[in-house]
Image 1 (cartoon, rainbow, N blue to C red):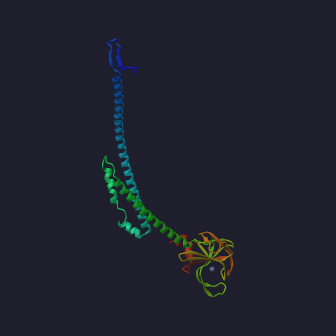
Image 2: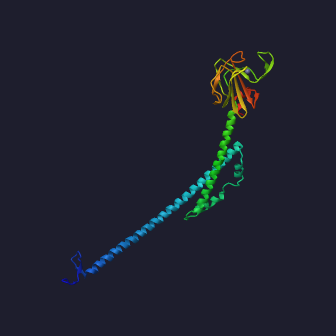
Image 3: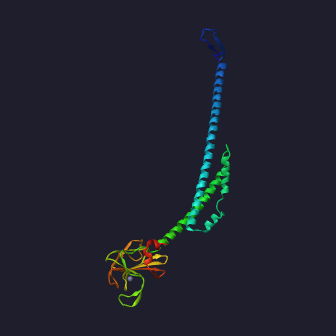
Length: 306
Ligand SMILES: [Zn+2]
């Protein structure tokens, strides 16, 4: 080998500004680089420790924030509980107003079978404890209560809606108001027949007006008959359900067809003089369970709906 090992040295010079004594430090090359190496390592390590510390401070702050959020969330859940409770009370008021009771209602208002408020007390208790995270169990129990109470309310409201719908159908099935503008020329009951002169029973009322005056349905219903009938001329019969039918006789013409659904106040035809009639008028009948009743009682809308 042509080369021989020679020890290399590095000298570190420290020269003060004031021309004072210089300081020199001669050391072997390997020592110098070793020193630099350890210096770098310790630098990296101290940065690591520092960042860990900063991270720790940050985590502490973040935990405080999470704890606050956790409490806020718990309070929101309690608010939801209050809302669902109030909805339940509203539901009770509605039922009382409608005098509507059902199995479901009885279960609910005797307090058996419904969700228990006790389940949410854990959440209330834990909210009051400072600096402790609210347990999963407290959340779960409260949410379970809200879920069950809301489901019960929903079921109850559905019952109320179907009850009101049914009642409304019954109400709208009751004929009310005047089928045609005009004046009553013949009332309901026994009378002397204008054609035969004999005593007969008039099953409706006669309302007179000009030929062609629009005749309207006095309640929602289905056309169960329209056509010519001896004596009545062109007659339309409407079935309103719940036992009510109305009949409109002596029409000049009708503008509906058999089976058609009509709404209250919908024009079904026009006043005429067909059949056994001496002058243009409408023969108007109301039947309840097949028996003719006095239509005069139903001409006033408010009274009829009672
Ligand atoms: Zn008549």
